[in-house]
Length: 84
Image (cartoon, rainbow, N blue to C red; front, side, top):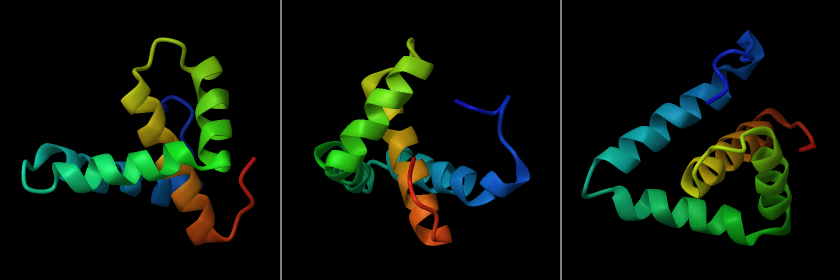
């Protein structure tokens, strides 16, 4: 989704997308993928992130926005960054 603006510091974020892609593509793991996105979409932080991303990626699907929010929030958390 954001390959034109990705930086080397975004490596964990991009790996998170790869892991989510594996979960999404495997019928046995698809429910785990959906549960992760559902969790993030119900938190205040997740809702705010999705809202912000929606204005930036106005043609993205809701699932794509939720996945992007998850990847951003997860990678920032692991790296000890505050989420914008």
